[in-house]
Image (cartoon, rainbow, N blue to C red):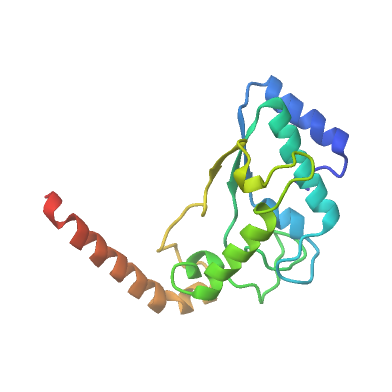
Length: 177
């Protein structure tokens, strides 16, 4: 579990990072921990949200900025854990470039998780000065290595997307030499 179920432990961990000289914390894939064991897409259990909000407020208290980085492949889908998603989970990382439903999933989940008031700081998470950076995608790429049957089946859409992007870049940079 990336976060302890005890607020005092979270506080001690955050204070330790601060004493070590860190000034930011990168929250990569935290939505998997928040959603672990859920059965409904875009479901955020109240108890885990509370611990997450506490983490953010404690980081802010000791001067740690937040870097938010959602992990894309399964995004805000239900599942037992981040390492054991159901076979029916969609790989949204590559689909986000070409499929509206993948973008809608990202947008909905991000808004539900981050476009709300943190009860401990009293500030909307997206508007809080402690938010240093939002990385919309980790390892952003339109041409990842095909690692699954689903990825291989998706190749024709990816290739057309890559071709479009390459032609657009060629057009925009043609006068750059």
